[in-house]
Length: 461
Image (cartoon, rainbow, N blue to C red; front, side, top):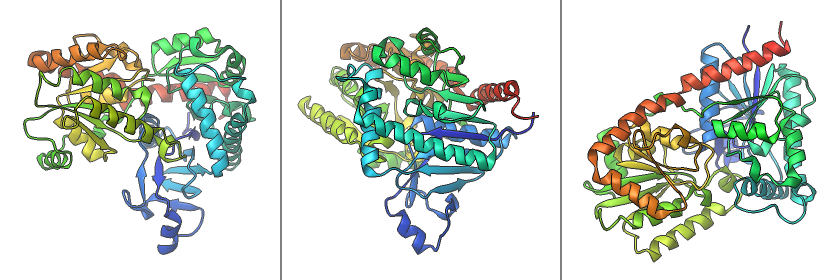
């Protein structure tokens, strides 16, 4: 089989431009629709968007290009403040823009879907599919489908790879018989799907030739829900070679920036600011052991997701305010550190400097941050409600705790902080387990799936 021509799509874009990018174009004399990322300065003109979806798609495309599996891949994503098209190497980024009112309605609808499927709220009065906001959600998917269709006419793609719940309706809008893959990144529990949604969601799912979820239990739930196509679980993966040991100087800069002393014992949480990420539970659990380990500090890394910063949903700011107030009430101001967004180099320093990592999510699709910590041989204390929990052998490569019980987390923190041998064993065994989420394994599984679908559909001689 020859090289595949792929169009992938995600809500979250790979890169987020500063609001003044149009002025940058004029200043540098850049014209035309297609612009090379080499014309811009990272950290000044743009930054890479945080999040597990982009951290998977970008290395996947690069690896498949490097191995001769793909050619000319296109990536479509929502990016209201960005050039229409940007190339990064051999990858073409195509950006969808929506007006402010459309973005607002879309954002409200997708937040309703997200909260409902995470069990945060029950279905609002009346069916979602008859609400005004759902019109904007549908409109966004329609705009994406029109762009993808135009790109297909120009590039004759072999298949389409759609990512996450925000874009579930896309396959139904792509009037083509070419193979379509959907990857569901958030948790999937069919029991949380409202009865009024089931028929519509089932129709959406069954427009795809294959659906991928992040772990075994989500696969079982998807089949129970009634998906009739080819269903797979592929553990999320990261480019592990991209995580290097930081220099002494980089660690010292990190310590100085965030007021961490030489003898401080750092407990690390890396997550976007969102109530579902359970930072409040981590703070409460830590407060119960803080006196027993007086030189320990809880370091919370992360800011808002693309939804908070890219399309104007303000939940990250509200959640940060609530967390700071919780810290104040507990009298922990000098023991809890909020770093905000970290560059990749700073994040590497954080992992190297910490003594353990905590994944406190109330519900989590997977939890790649555990893999990141394992690459530095750090013991992980993991929520029982995270997809990655099925990779944890309690007491061997990590510890599992109930994210709704701060006392349970406190017990696990105390166990690791009090027993150096346990901490070392958890870190070493965790490092070995991390290889199950390597880019190598991910690329192999994804490539076999894509090539099998294209071969079975006979879209290429």
